[in-house]
Amino acid sequence: MNFPLYFSKKIAFSKDNKNNLSRVIVFIGRLSVALGVIVSLITVSTGVGSKKAIKERMADFSGHISVKSKQSNNSYNSSILSNDGLQLNKIKALPDVASTQKYVAVSGILRNEHNFAGIIFKGVGKDFDSARFRKFLVAGHAPVVTEKGFNNGICISQKIANDLHLGIKDSIVAIFSKENQSPLYRKFEVVGIYKTDIKMIDDLFIIGGINHARKIQGMKDSEIGGIDIFLKDIDNIDVDTPKIDELVGYKNYTVKATDEYPQIMDFIAIFDTNIALIITIMLVVVIINIIMVLLILIIERTNSIGMLKTLGATNGQIRMIFINYTLLIMVPGLIFGNLIGLAFLFIQKHFGIIKLNPENYYLSVVPVEINVFQILLISAGILIVSGISLVLPSYLISKISPVKAIKYN
Image (tube, rainbow, N blue to C red; front, side):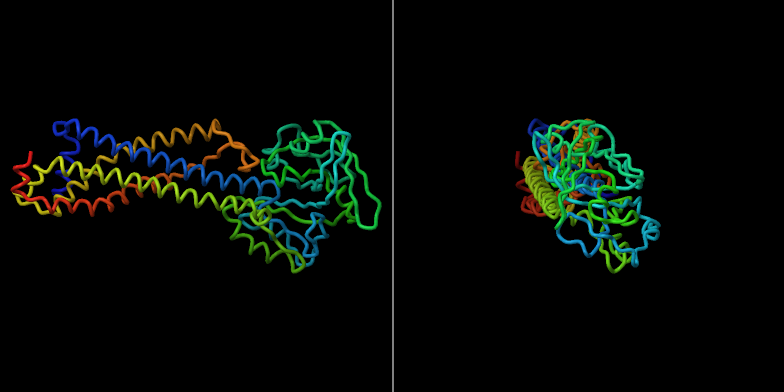
């Protein structure tokens, strides 16, 4: 029989031994543990959820990985994608690839009597993943593209729609200019309005038919400016990019969605620092409170310590009794902390109660990512770190004299 564990269970779950001071100390210990678990769960789940949600929004709009021509300059205008060495069928056959779509991009200006806006016209073909794009729609529908003739329907962002006072079925003139050529005017009809909450996208991009973009760029019907590749899991983006890079040909190159907007990735990197800082602070608070609980319990039970020493218990056994006793006190705090924290996370996940300013956070609602492994890791981590931190203060027991302890009341 494990004597320290058996004895610690007896005193931990015995109602007869708990005076008013013990109840207060135990309550404080459990409360600190519960708060530590709640804050840690919320911090990790919302932090990881925010990182993933922002990455997925970028990727679901413009592709997890894009294939472009090396002749492309720093402008948004597409150059003709080379077919030399481009093995699109092999790219589509990769296990992690969900779909692909071709496009041609060209910069221009939208103008009406209310205002004007600089835009990037992204012309898409019949392979456009409208189902993936649908999550961004706030009104109307995605452009219907058949690649036969010119489709005049476009989808604009809510930001552009507000700036130009546009709604569904409204008409708008776009102006495109090329070097040494007269400006080209195109009249479009707004068929959809989208919102990604990512300013760099919402401020610029409109979606339309690929033939308009080809005509403006002087491309042939079979020529394209790039390929968007969508993966089944964005977490595999770093693994799959080198594989795809080998299949695009030496005249083309790949770029990850996470590299398209470095300022957003810098913002996302802050989440890791914040998560680590908050969890560290909460661990320190929990450890301080648990050490305080242990020391007060030792002082309160000095008489019992003297009795155990008199009966032959070693200092090590008595230390383990009080360490086990303190850890057992923490268990209800861990349970209730997890229940309360998970309840809050489920409410936020399904109802989106807490909102965000998308101009600052690239999201309009705080996202939640609930991971069972992370939940268990947080609870186990708090328990293990607390147990280790109790070892040093428990040495106070070795300073207690059996004779003086028995006389102590």
